Image (cartoon, rainbow, N blue to C red; front, side):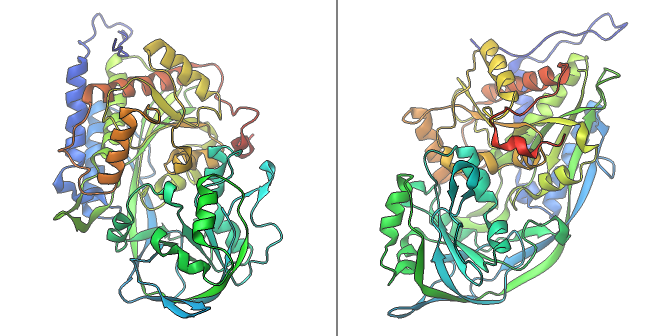
Amino acid sequence: MRLFLAVPFLLAGCATVPRAPSPEERAQRWWGDVSALADDGMEGRLTGTPGYQRAADYVVSRLQAMGLEPAGTDGFFQPIAFEEQVVDHAASRAALIGPGGTTVLSLPQDMIVGRGDGRRPARIEAPLVFVGYGLHIPEAGHDDFAGLDLAGRIAVVISGGPAHISAALKAHARRDRARLLAERGALGMITLTAPKAVETPWSRSVAQAGQSGMYFADPALRDVKSEFFNASVATEASETLFAGSGHSFAEVAALADASGPLPRVALARTLRAQVVTRHKAVRASNVVARLPGSDPALRDEHVVFSGHLDHLGVGAPINGDGLYNGAMDNGAGIASLLDIAQSIVERRARPKRSLLFVFVTAEEKGLLGSRYFSLRPSVPRRSIVADLNFDMALPIFPLRSVIALGAEESSLGTVAAEVGAGMGLPLVPDPWPDRNSFVRSDQYSFIREGIPALAFKFGFARGTPEAEIERVWRSTRYHAPSDDLSQPVEKIDAVRLNDFVAAIGLKVANASERPRWNDQSFFRRFAKD
């Protein structure tokens, strides 16, 4: 049975309440917002482009029509200064030098130089050292950097991690690798992917290699302050890095696929590279709106609903189409925030705490918009009690359960489970924890600042028809022009998930106590007391 969050409320002194929209009407409204945001006229919503600004203006117009308050630093907007970096792979060069002579790497077919997280050095020549998973987690008894002299070297790492360490903790450690390596004197990092961990075709990454990366214009906000080489190597080309080392990529990949312990290997090869880049200043804004709370003692606190407004813009054509509309990633998530806001407004009763709706920019460039908001929020940081994030929830099969990423880390998981029990939507674990989903969207920016957070997806389990639908979607539509308005979507079930998340937010907003990190959570350390 499909249950919808639709509780009639009365304003003081008001005799009647307008009829609440039916599920079908709300689904149509939700799809109307998705269609507007993923329209060709938005040109893929690339951060810093006119298309992105049109999408931001559309969101503001919807918020104004609902009567929400502007809560940015410039009305509804929170402007951010970025530097854009484009790697000219055609003009760049890379080779491996060592036993057997020189092996030229084709760019970007064999190796893609990263565009984000800081400037790339114009030239680099440094020996390679394989450091396993590249994870520094001493609390879990695992440190791939211990005892290694990384100064002047390029660290080579592979996907995955030990089976006994939680997916969330491994994901966090992966996000922190570049900073830790730079602090230890490493000049760069090369990432390899074990065959079973391949999520999308390498050809998709090659097609996007010409797209820009971004980082904050203010160096103080960057995780890696200095120039740092960062690249990934195709699975098919990874064996060349291990030539003459006494080890093989096939060997370490098999161990990584099994989450087993990995050797650390001083590789016999040196990378020599010349990297040609172009840079320019870019500005784009988060959009922030507020629904004030009703309780004098709690209304200065905020429950955040977040999602990213940007996508990939116009890029390399796939099957003749070069416009990356981003319907599910993340036009659908933005439409869900608008639906939640409007449905709460339509109930005509405000929760005790205030609700903050944050539509962030530059998620596709490394969670930059949410990172900026979490570091320099437009409301007092201490006032933010929780974040509930939408990103690629994927309403592409019927909604029977929910994946709430981060549920095991804080009391928000208990709230989500209670809401799910009442709505017939049980929580299920992430079936693919090694995808690092926990740190690949904007909730992670809030977590890093000590704020409990959840992110939501349609639930499924391995080996089911839903898992196959999701796999096919990722291999054919994820970060591809085919993520457009022509794909089949479960519109009414998308609104059901909206109601699920809204119910969590309202329960948190009306609770006497703030959400808290669980005692055993690694991320409790980030809490600001």
